[in-house]
Length: 102
Image 1 (tube, rainbow, N blue to C red):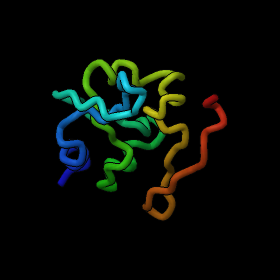
Image 2: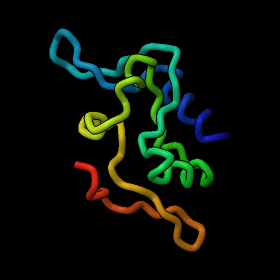
Image 3: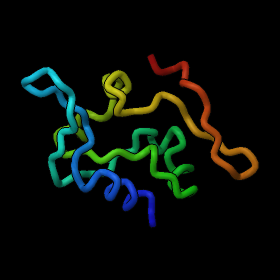
Image 4: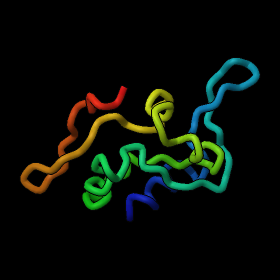
């Protein structure tokens, strides 16, 4: 199974963004349809994980939440991972938090 398809099935084709309810509890948004978002951007090594068949760096988001999933605020909201991937001997290796990200 491709990583994208695995992420969609894991999310049950519903938005995985966490939202606060009127009762002050966090819950999944749950809206459909969803788009697959790279929490570890392609530029930071998301493509390395794609090629390795990994899906943990992918999150399913509705259009509304996907629009807010880029930029500095997305790191704070945990919709983007601040680290990056490299390869070592052909295998993905996670590198610690990128110091250029506040």
